[in-house]
Length: 327
Image (cartoon, rainbow, N blue to C red; front, side, top):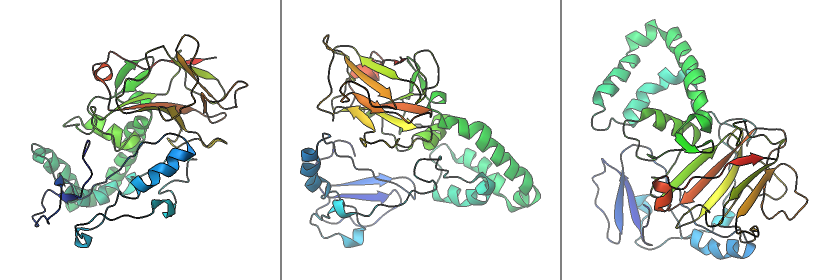
């Protein structure tokens, strides 16, 4: 839905054959029984912009077709309740969406809910053979043990950014087929595990970093600098951000409630030569903290650079992110 104009849009599964009511701007189809929509609205990191953008956010609504009136509906999202984290404890552990001990119990329903794409039916039939009751009954313990082992030895490592995608220089990795994986099932699995809901490359470029310039794991006990040379900020037509996540891929709590730096931060201080240096460490720096990205003390962490609406220099690999240099 990238680049859509304001309007009333209908989201429906591919199998839906209902009548499109008058006033609908466009119909978007999704090819599974389950889908998700994640609206984004850019704002500067200021109280004034936060207040100014609220009326815009209030116009982003989703509701069943039965409630469609042909007119724009609004709500006050500033009053929305805060929901507890699902499957985790808010940052102290990884959220586990799949229980390998019951994977083969859940698999038949999943194969029905997410139908095969063109060219995948033979693969579905092969996978589906593992759900035959005569197979599962006779080999229940083996299937369960195999699923647990695969979750630990194959899936868990994909949670580490350094194990996914392709090298992008300076120990960063990236991926070039987000949201259009095709038969690249390894990348599809990795994104589902570590970075679900990615956009297509022309919408957003993603760069992941677990290691510093020397190849050592990023750690909150150390200080790092990330310096963009003059004229070499991430080339994005929209905006860019450098975000820090703890080892469980959650924001790291800090007194500033600051989890990223980028286009939204209007008070970033450039160096005399025009370069921009961001400091990543656990303690507040002695100098001005405008360029400080707080890290979790004594814990591994990851850096994640996003460039929305990237320019060709990112898409063709001409531009690459700078290294995280330890002090």
